Image 1 (cartoon, rainbow, N blue to C red):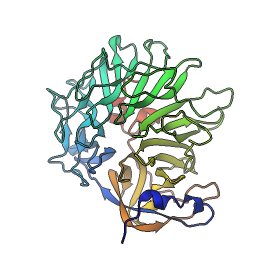
Image 2: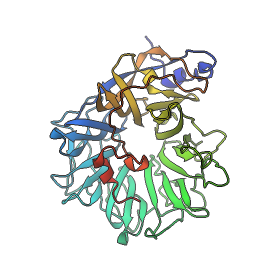
Image 3: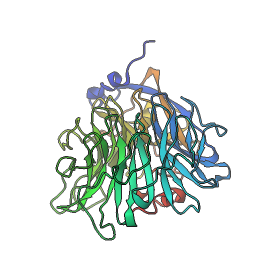
Amino acid sequence: MKRIAPLSILGCSGLLFAASTCFAQMYTVTDLGTLGGSQSLANGINASGQVVGWSYTAGDNFIHAFRTAPNSPINPGSDDLHTLAGVSESVAYGINDSGQVAGVSFLPGNKVEHAFRTAPNKSINPAKDDLGTLGGTSSYGYGINSSGQVVGVSLITGNLGEHAFRTAANSPINPNTDDLGTLGGAFSPFVGGISYAQGINESGQVVGWSLCINPLSDHAFRTAPNSSINPATDDLGAFPRTPDVIPTSYGYGINVLGQAIGYSFVGGATGPPTLHAFRTAPNSSINPATDDLGTLGGVQSYAQSINASGQVVGYSFLSDNSTVHAFLYGGGAIYDLNTLIPPGSGWELVAAYGINDAAQIVGEGIHNSQVRAFLLTTSDEPVVQQPTNADESSVSATMEVVPVCWRDARLHGSPACARQLQFQSWTR
């Protein structure tokens, strides 16, 4: 059977809410397994289908970064990237098409963490892969492009601020050239301001978020290619809110066209916090009329990754506002990924963190009551989309709840997975 491109199938979204069924792309699910422990999570995927993330090691004693072979489960004998300091912990966040991996690892003593970048398809080399910092004690690497430029966040000299950085190709952090600055905001004790770089494209454009002033709030930003943050041009704005609430947004990814994704708060100050995923037009600010991706029926959705076709993945609350499912946005509609996998698979897909240009998707899910990294690959067969509610949310049954380790527990205020929380211990 001729393969149908995911975007063409997802283009049926105009019929989705006029009728109870619609054809959408079918995915097969691969359980990526672990490095020997009880849990794993996938953060990124490259064009070859190599997946990176983290897993507990045998006995659940440590969290280690991993990188798989193309389209393959985790092999504990070959895929453990180890750490910058022997007996320690590490997390992989990004991978480029050469198999270079960016992430973070604790240093000796497990009290200070540094960003790292591996050589292509190699484990972490403590002598070469430590990227250093912007002058402070800690740094994180979140994204990497094909040139080997890494972006992330580092404490600055005196630990008086957290600044986004972008390295030169295959080079460590240079405090004199790689500090991207901020949108201008500061507060005690972070008198140097705050900014985070979360993603980078092939042109060296960086997306993230920063504290800004007038009014004091967090806003998503997108830089010009290989440039620092320009407060006059790079602030992406936010969705509007009621006059008593300051608009706020966070940028998380960018594609080759300069489309930025992330999430922004909407509505007022009463009731549960309401925020929606967004996707901008190429090299444009957030447009509330066109860029709101909506939710799976609940009050919150978070965009995490975007591919060259503009397909977006992330996670969203369902209508009960307690169950979280992974989503795919494409063709003008948001889809619960649990409705696009074979029924009876035993999976509940909780969050999607990465998508490549072949529409392969990675993230975390619950498989037979175990928290596991997953890989979704498009199949040749379409599946009938299940009915939707009147509010356009997917009809989904609440499944068994087990502890889930969020990729960035700081953003969720969740006590689940204390090891992930300690990786964020120096953030505000």
